[in-house]
Image 1 (cartoon, rainbow, N blue to C red):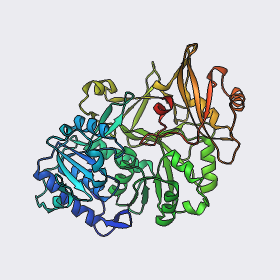
Image 2: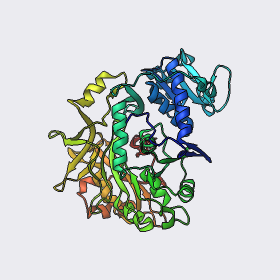
Image 3: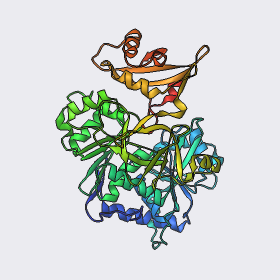
Amino acid sequence: MRLSDLARPGDAVALVHDGRRTTYRELHDDVAALAAAMRTDGLAGEPVALLLPNGPELVTAYLACFASGAIAAPLNRRYAPPEIERALRLLRPRWLLVHADRLDVLARVDTAALAGVRLILVGGSRPGFESWAELFRETTPAGRAVPPQGDAVVFLTSGSTGRPKGVVHSHASALAMLTSTAEALGDVTADDVVQVFEPLVHVSGFIATFATLLAGGTVVLYDGFDATTYADALRTHRPTLVCTHIDVLAQLLRVPGVCRDWFASLRGVYTGGDVVPAGLQQEFRAVTGLPIGVGYGMTEAIWLTVQREPPLYRDGCIGRPVGGARLRVDETTGELLVAGPMVMSRYWADPELTAASLVDGWFRTGDLAERDADGLWWFTGRIKDVIVRRTSKITPGEVETALAQHPAVELVAVIGAEDPEEGQVPVAFVVPRPGAAPPTADELTAFLAERIAAYKIPARFHLRPALPLTPSGKIARRDLRE
C-alpha cells in the first residue's frame, strides 16, 4: 500500500463535512487532477504550504502531494503574521494554498517571505492569486512511483524556545504512523465512521483522518471544537471511533443532558498526549459505559503504545507497543528511547538537532517512563519538567496523580517555579470539579500530606476554570510558567 492510496474507490462515502458528502470516487478524481497540476509544475521534492481549514480541500491537497511527490507542509491557521513568516522562511515552499479567510493575516506578512511562491486561493478570488478551481484542468498522466524514503510531510511544532521545528516524515514512516494508528484503534475497517474535530495540520487530526481513509472508512470532519457541537455530532453521525484530547472528553461530561445513548454507536474512545486521571476514567465509564483507551506518541513518532482498558490503581499507563515500535530506557538518565518504522526521518534544515535527537536509530523522546513486571509501560514525566527543590528531584506527574485523587479536583497541572531559597518549587494549577466546593490550599496541602513526601507538596495552588492547551491538545505548560 502507498501513502496516496484510497482503499475503497467508488460511491462509498469518504468524507462528511459541513453537510456535504464526498465519495471515494470524487475524492480520487480530485486528487488525480491536483496531483497532475503539481507534476506539471515540477513539485516533486518541493514543499507545498497548506494554510487551509479542515475540509475536503485540505484532504485533497495532502493526498495530491503524496501522489505527485511534493512535500505537504501544513501551517497552523491560528498563526499570527510573524509566525507565518517564520514558517515560510524556514520551509521555502514553491506553492502556498491559502483559504480566503486567512487573506487578512497573509496581507501582513513580509512580501519578501512570499517571493517566488505560487499563491493559490481556496474559497474566493483576489488579484494576485490563482484560483483553486483552475488547478483541476490538468491532464498530465501519472508520474513515476514516489520512493518510500522520499519526504512526504513536514509538521511544524514549537520547541522550548518557540522556534518552529520541522518534523519530516518520509512516505514510509508516514504510512507506518497510519498503520500503527489503525492497529492501536482496534484495527480500523471500511465499516468504521470516525469523528475528527482535531486540526489536520497537527499529527493528531492527520493520523485519525488518513488511517480511516486508508482503511476505506468514513471521516466525519469538523473545523473547530465546542462541546455542544461535538455532542450533536455524536448523535447525528453515530461514529464508531473517536480519538480526541482529554479536555474534550472532560467537557463532554459537562454538556447538559449527557447520557449513555450519545455514545452507544462507539466501539472505542481513545486519547493521548497527557495522563488521564483515574477520576476522569471512572466518571467517563460511569456515564458512557466505555473506558478511555490511552496511547503514547508524538509528532516525531506515533502511535507507539496503546492500552485499551487502563488500570485505575495508578495514573500514567500507556500500555504495550504497537506497529513494530520498540521502547527502551536510557540507564543513565531514565529517558525513554523509541525506534520503529513510524519514527521521523529528520528535522527540516536542522542537522544538529537531528543528530542530537536520533542516535543509532533511536529517538530521544525527552520523556521518562518505566516498564512494570507485566510488560506494561508507564509514563512518569518529562526530563525538562523535573523540579529540583533543594537538590531533591520531583516529577510533576507524581504530584498531579496525587492531586487528581481529590474528589473536588477535575484537572491539574504542576510546574516548577524559580525560588530564591529553594531553587525551584512545585506550583499547582487546579480546575475544580463542577458542582463541588472549590478546594482551599490548606485542604489540598493536608490531602497531599497523606500521599506524598512533604518536599513534593506544591508551594502554591492556583484555581483556574480551565487549563491552557497547545494546538495539539497537550497542557501548555510554558503558558502556565509565564
